[in-house]
Length: 328
Image (cartoon, rainbow, N blue to C red; front, side, top):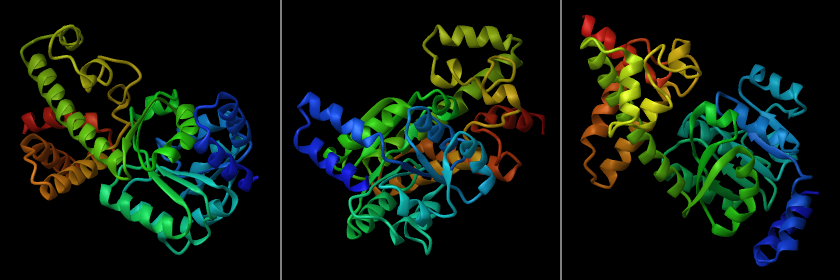
């Protein structure tokens, strides 16, 4: 079956404008399993959406308890990334950081120790673009194909299959992987060579962090001026100050339902991860001699938050952090 899929990807590549070949390719590919490594806040709902769309999933995570819910839905759970590589020729990874990605792909029990030739490897972690390129080179030496495909939208979008995928890699491989992305996301954008997806994601997350801090500052100021927070949010969202952090992910408890601020900042995108992303943005800005004064300040704020007990809270807890700072 694995050979059938690899062959079907090749057929699709050379006949991508023929409708019946597209249908045939998807029909054959859908019968082959998809490996998924990393079942955290983002990876778990992504893997669930693959299952819901009829893809057999072979899963692994460093924390076995993370696999239980997926296993109950019908996924096969194995012990290590190398075990996944033995059983699947399409593998997705969703991991916290660059060192985790390096370990999962090139470590003693990593994917590349047992990867089959022709395997499509897709990493949706947010990591250094340079690491993505290194993994692509390592995969190519083993006869596999690596693509970076970080996502935007948070846990809510992961759960409802409305993520945005930013994809870097060979364009013909992008066409072959697109059917998987559309099971998990509403927007799939081809960005160019390997690493370009990560570059787009880091730029997006830097802006997101800056926007969240600005929204938190604004809401805090308005509240101190005596404005009702729901009223202020309503005004912002019909005015020029509107942004995603104000109208979709408001950081003030009680303003919106279904967001981390309504649940003591639990779930969502952790402060530690945002600090990591901003550190990556800082490194790439230094390497390219790009001035990012607000990005650098945002990085400092999130680093301080991590040292003040906010590491495991959602990054929108910057509002709570600012409220506590003013009381000191």
